[in-house]
Length: 164
Ligand SMILES: [Zn+2]
Image (cartoon, rainbow, N blue to C red):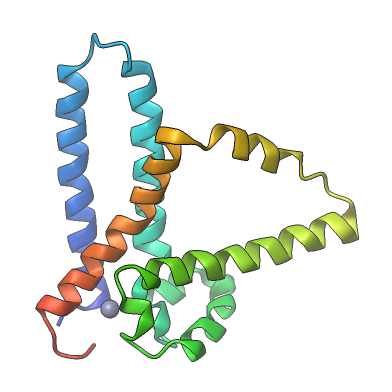
């Protein structure tokens, strides 16, 4: 039964292994043309991975959990999610699980941005910049970084299948 902390440890260990492999790859290709592009990609991947490990855990389907607490005051935003999703149900599906959390987070983000825009006339130009920059390899690095820790979590839950 992997507890929240063991989950995080396993996911961070996997990130360490990936980082080592990436550093090895980077050293090998130090003189290759795409070296300049490689480092920001690795950074995007690592940040997305950490964000997902710490804050987008499948165990957000529990009313009280470490990932909830890590959101601080914003943890209340995840209460409807915990109510909506049975523990280890859809939230722990390898495909629908990560999508459900990204979609849920997206709804909150959209609501906050809409509020800022319509109530305080905050410009949303930066969204267009993001959209323009976030394509191809960068989008892949972000997506894989966000989804991979969830897959490790779900896999571990299935290997150690006592309910938790
Ligand atoms: Zn779990």
